[in-house]
Image (cartoon, rainbow, N blue to C red; front, side):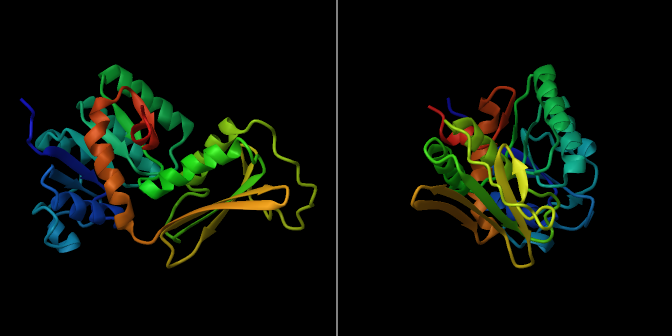
Length: 270
């Protein structure tokens, strides 16, 4: 018999911009039940005060471990900061709760620790640089193009509030380009009059980061060839664009093994 009960979800970073959007999206979807909302800010505030009537009628809790113990979720979604996201993931895994980490900027050491914890506690986890379906398709198309056009640069733009640069999406895209290239890119011989003018070099891909008010999330991947230029661009105009991907990750994470990095492992499997 198919279990049709809603998936029990913990929202970590519930009072932030993404957290508020998650509360609305999950609160209006009967397939999910938000059982705890956690944040260091607005402790004790009703989620509906922050996110509107679509959000669950819960008060914001402060402590991750105690909240997980009390509410017994099956999965957790984390939109906090790199400094705390790895620790939150470890708290979840120790309790057999599958974390989906949307926070970018985790270090290789953080990822290694989460991977080890997945094995130790036999509980799967995901780290997702970008939940927008269009952004995942952009990365997929860029990977395809890199096999034929190895000369490429990335320009990404986010709001002033984004803590890391380059973005996790740009780093992930550069890694995919590197793995798909069949030849090395040409070497630019221009001298930088100002250090950093050519952007950061990530896997032999120059990445340029823009941080401005009014921006949500945008990325261009620009390929150059003999007599042609190919531009693949994705724009998230509203944080609502990430919610379908969040729901897919939460529904599927428990069917995975170990640590999975990137939502494309679900969307494009098989």
